[in-house]
Image (cartoon, rainbow, N blue to C red):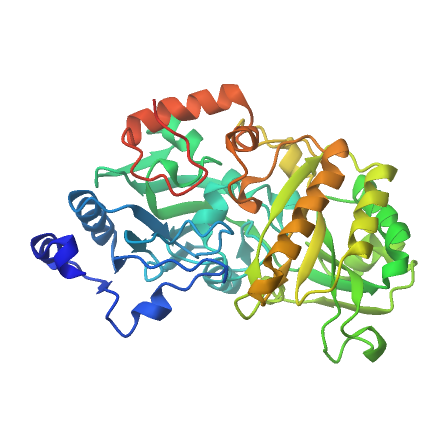
Amino acid sequence: MKGSIGQAALDELLRGFKGEVLLPDDPAYAEGRKIFNAMIDRRPAVIARCAEAADVSRAVRFGQDAGLEIAVRGGGHHVAGWSLTDGGLVIDLSRLNAVEVDPRASIARVQGGATLGDLARACQPHGLATTGGTCPGTGVAGLTLGGGWGYLARKFGLAADNLLSIRLTTADGNTVVASDDEHQDLFWALHGGGGNFGIATEFTFRLHPLADATMATLVFSLEAGPEVVARFRRLFEEGPDELCGELVYMACPAEDSFPSHLVGKLCLHVGTVYVGPESGARKAIEPLLKAGPEAQMIAAMPYTDILNAGDIGPRYRHCCSSEHMITLSDGAIERFCARAGDANVGPGWLQALASWGGRIARHAGDWPIADRDAAWMVYSFPMWDDPEEDERYIGLAKALRADMTPYATGNPYLNLIADEGKERMVAGYGGETKYRRLVKIKNEYDPDNILHLNHNIKPL
C-alpha cells in the first residue's frame, strides 16, 4: 500500500504530523475504519488521525498530492457513511475533541472532532448548554453543519442558530475563520451547507442557562397509537417552547422499568424533554398522562444524562429518510400509525415523529435549511443486524416516506437522509435560489470539489 501511494508522499505527511497515521497493516486499522452504520464496509488507503489543526492542513495537502479521494470523519454517524472512502484518505478528527467553556461570556469553543457528549459534559458544571442532537456519540460538526435539530431546539433554536464563528481548513489546506464579521458568505453557507466548503476544526457556540431539565418516557400499546399521536399533536400545537419531544415506534426493551408483557413487542414510545423542573414537565404533558401509558418514567436529571439516554449502543445496520410537515393532519396520523402496525419488529427504532416549531420557526436567520416554519418532522430510522434483512428494512423506510408524501412539503432534513438524488438535496438546502448561492460559495472555496463526500454542492 505504501508503494501505491508513493513513499515520498507518505514521508512528507509523516514529517511534522503530530497525530497517528494508520495503514491497512496496522493493528488499529480495523477499529479505525468502523463507523456508526454497520452497513458501510470501506477500506481506505490511509487514515490520518489528526492531533492538531495543523495536522488537518498537512493531511489535506497530502491527499491532493497523492491523488486520493478525501473523506472527513467527525463522529462518523451519517447514514451514508461519507466519513469513509475505499482506497482513499480518511481525515479523522476524533482526537480533536477538546471543549473550552467560558462561563462568564456564556460561550464554548469546541474542536471539530468533539461529540455532543463531549460538549454537554463540559457545559454541565457551569449550568449551561446549547442545542445538541439526541445521541451523545454524534459529532458536533456534522450535526451543526447540517442544521442541528435536538431536544433543546424549540427553546434555543437549532445548533447552527447558536454559532458565533467557525475555524475552517479549506480544500487548499489554508485556514479561514468565518463569522458575522469575516467571510460572511461562507458563514451563511456553513449554517446548513454541510462539509462542502472546508473541514471545521473549531466552533464557537453561544450557550444558554440550563439549571433544570426533565425527561419523560411514556410507553403505550400499539393499539393506542392513533389516540396518543393526536394528543401529541395537540400538546405541541398549544405547548410551551420549553417542551420538545418525539414519538417512536420500536420494540420494548428488556429493562426493569418496562412491564414484562410488553418486552419484545412493538410499542409506541413517547419521549419529551422539558427545560425546567419536574412539576412543569408533568403539567405540560398532562394530556399524554391522561391517555394511560402502560409504563412511564418522569424525572429531573442533568442534560448529559438526557443525552446519554439516546445512546444507541452496539453498531447496527440502518437507513434513514425524512420529511417535513407544516401541519399534522388526521390523514397523516392514520397513515403513520398504520405503517408501523404493518411492520415487523427490529432491535431498534422503526419510525419517528418529532416536534419542530418554537424558536426553530421564529429564528430570523435565512440559512440554507429547509422548512424552518414546519411544525413536524417525520423520519424512518430502522436498525437491524442481519444483512439478509437489508432489503426489507430499506423497503420499510421507503414505504413510510411514500405514505407521508401527500402530507409533506417534500423538503427533507438533510442530516437524516442518505443520497436521495439532487432534487431532494436542493430541496433540503431550501430550494434553487439558496442552492445557486451555495454553488457560488463552493466555487470560491473548493472549485475542484475536493470535499465531495457529503450532500455535494458541485462547483461550476
